[in-house]
Amino acid sequence: MHKLWLPWLILFGLALGCAALLVLGSKIGPIAALAVALLPMLAYFAITRPFIVPYAIYVLLLPFDNVLAFSSGTTLTKFLGIASAGAILLWGIGRRRVLGPSTTLWLCALLVFWMAASLLWAFDVKASMSIIPTYVGLFFLYVVLSVVRVERQDYVILLIAMVVGSIVASMYGIAVFHNQSATDAQALADNLGRMEVKIGDNTIDPNAYSDAILLPFCILLTWGLRSKDLISKAATLAGIVVMLGAVYVSASRGAILAIATAVGYLIIRSRYRFVLLACALVPTILIFVTQSALIDRFNEAQRTGGAGRMGIWSVGMAAFQHHWLIGSGIGNYRALYDTFFIQVYQRYSGGWGRPSHNLIIQVAVEMGVVGLVLVLTFWASNLFALRHIRPNSEWYDYRLALEAATIGIFVAALSIDLLWFKLTWLVFGTVAQLRALTITARARAPALAKVRGGRARPAPRAAPSPTLQPGRVTG
Image 1 (tube, rainbow, N blue to C red):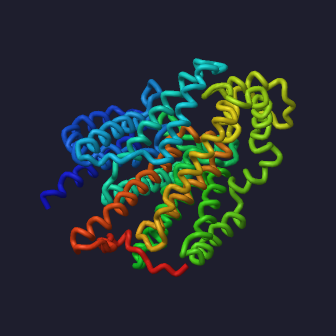
Image 2 (image 1 turned 135 degrees about the horizontal axis):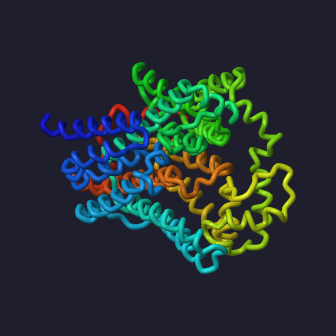
Image 3 (image 1 turned 60 degrees about the vertical axis):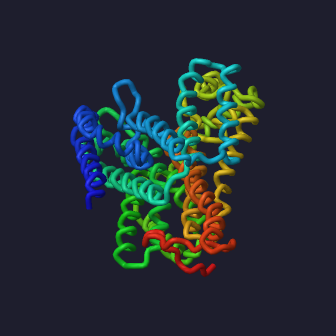
């Protein structure tokens, strides 16, 4: 029992911090004071278990990313991400758990190099300089997660943190939607009834809020399918309902399509395909038989050109034709958009200074064909990074869940700029961590079997926890 009091105390402190955040809005002074009080304990865990503290805290708070902002605009999760990268790297070097770079990591390095090189010919150097530190920071964290092998127990805890953070964010969003004031209700009505997560003066974009639920949804769905007892299935079902409810009230079309794509992929690949197909019919029927803002937004998409996206994309294509090979520089889409705005006829005008709302067009305009090939190759490489995990592996269902999330987040990125969002790189980082964990275990198994048995033979797997208990492969 003496080893359990520190984790429980940490969790209790985090619960108090989250409660203070929700009650006090953007006044994060009390939370900072709490962090100072817990500093010795946090430092202890950062040295001994950096994947838990601070990285699990980073993952836990990521759904609230934009509302955890200081007056300068810098977010709390940014500091946690930097601290996580540094702590994990030092821990990995000290424990000699650093692996060689993967092909996916090399592709990512080439992509970031091309982003940095685009500063040399950027249309607006200031715009490029403002965004390149974000990409470099995300890349640094991704590198660390790729080369430092995570322990099995810590990886499971990280998955739990993702799910818990998403459920808390979903519950909060639903509560906001159903308890808004009369003024807020009218504002929501003017915005087709969409929910808006707001704490103090900081607001989360409804699309980004819903897209952040995708990866935890896939993980929780996998847990529900793998669980054997009725209580576990009921608990995961409740969590899934809460997540889908949050996406429903946010009325994000992109998120709905992303989740539908992820579920469709699992139906095709998973051994639980018939259960998934039966369960998917229920929310699908409910969506179409109930009158909601989500249905209204799909119905009005043709009338408004996808909330002006068709006009934005037509301007982007015009800009691409002038800078098609190497692009106009990272972070320069808005500048190019304003330059070509009045030169392109738009049936549905998006107005001035609009972001691309599309991964393909954004990358094509900013980094040209070269950058677009790099981005698509890197994304596809993440999709195939776990192909060594076979159907008889205990991690196979998690492989499918992460592949579904990778495809789903790509679909979501076709209607919103997600390349520089932390939630996108969380998917990449989680894939890289599972690859490092399983590649290492696969390489060590024959050697361990030879040492123990005198000859090389497949090593027996340790009995996994109930959450990870594999089922019999039937298809």
